[in-house]
Image 1: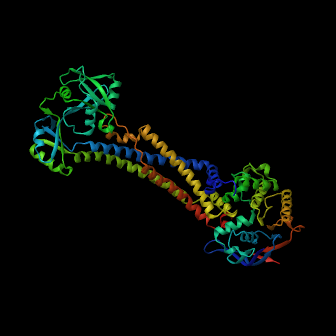
Image 2: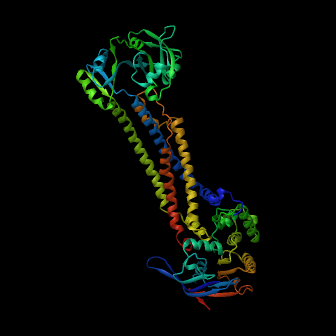
Image 3: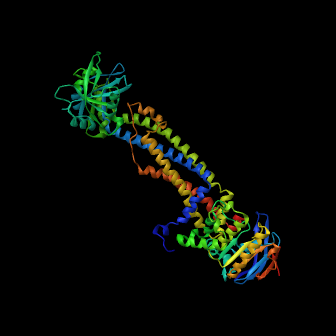
Length: 401
Length: 223
């Protein structure tokens, strides 16, 4: 036992070498298993990666939603609200803030996308943190007194592709143009929330959409105690029966409905993956070939112990399945985060249509990696070792005879 | 010393059918002795070898090697016993066809996890001794019958066993190769190994270095 390194004394390199040669000796069969295993791991991991990204995006979006939104409904469609309602709502006990929002969707025909124009007043409280950050970071009043705006990354890209690199010409409601400079680009926490957003002063938005100074698109309400959101929403409904009062819970349900519907499809895909995987496992577990049985018999006959045989089979199945696992995970990472899950991404099309573009954010979750590992590698290893154990515990004479 | 005491071996073919391979056998083989077990196919010769090698257990009776009851050994101890004491040359050689000669010869040493230098020295020594070193990298499936047999004998000797068992070693060889094998046997006998050969090949009968020839018939020894 001389000249052995620590690793050699812990791991039997010759057994591993033998396992590798056993894999190569049945290269066609093992290549087939490797391909199927890699594909299934890839599918499984891709589903989990996409789910993680969507969950992350959804949770970030839900956190940013206003607690209560009050919209005026006229003849069944949304209409501008009187700004004076802000003071009345603020008088309700439990309301900490109410902000009249001026915003709207602006359709940019050249790109075929909608931008969300959001008006802010630097001297007002902003109704969400992301806007607060933007207002603090950028200066909307430049020296030349030219209107300016801060745009999301997606908007910037869309405008640049259509020759608007420094400014953009908005078409106002009466048909004339309004030139607004691009003063900056912001990276928000989530693309879902902000990729299509343009932030400018309320006055500019009013001018583009022709909203009077006494009017607002809607009013967002903050309450002191989140437990009282529904109570306060009911009070607002009583005060303004012509208005629709939407709570963040209502919005969460509608977002989650979309997500759950999609995750249902993925669940089905996941089950198909597992089913196929177990079919392979079942085939493997149902027995060894006569050649494999004979080999185990020979090894026993020349002095291998049962545990030597099982160790070799463990190495053989682990090397094959772990290699397939690493390949599958690698492909899934590239597929989801580099190529943005083509084909599978189409399953999310309903979701992505909510916004101009939607990229799957990178979420590194070790739990997912472990989950995929435990759903694949140990099952295959066990399915390989069990029939080998059955044969290895028989009398060697019986096996090779 | 190898000792079989009142050994009976019955193979269960299925739940209803069984075959009595050996019936109340008593046999003693001294250390360094070369014994030929002769008899027709199905007489029970191979079963005796199998019991001495602890490849199977007797239905009744005892098999002792150096006073150790090998017929009672648990499976893992049987393997260790074979690895340390037995070199078995099987009738069909039982080599792994897609491995090279050297890899096949080294197989019994794989679980021992010896250092590379020792493994190399042992394999070189045994390959030279049985004249197969020039084929060491050739896959076994590409060897002739005689070369396969030499590889099998080399493998059986890699662990320098005290006991060599050979089951119909010349069954697949022509006369010239069979005579060559007999010469190898003579060398092994000279190294004081205990050798038991099961054969019905007349070439083995009446050899000057054979200590005993024992006739096996219908599962019994004809003394």
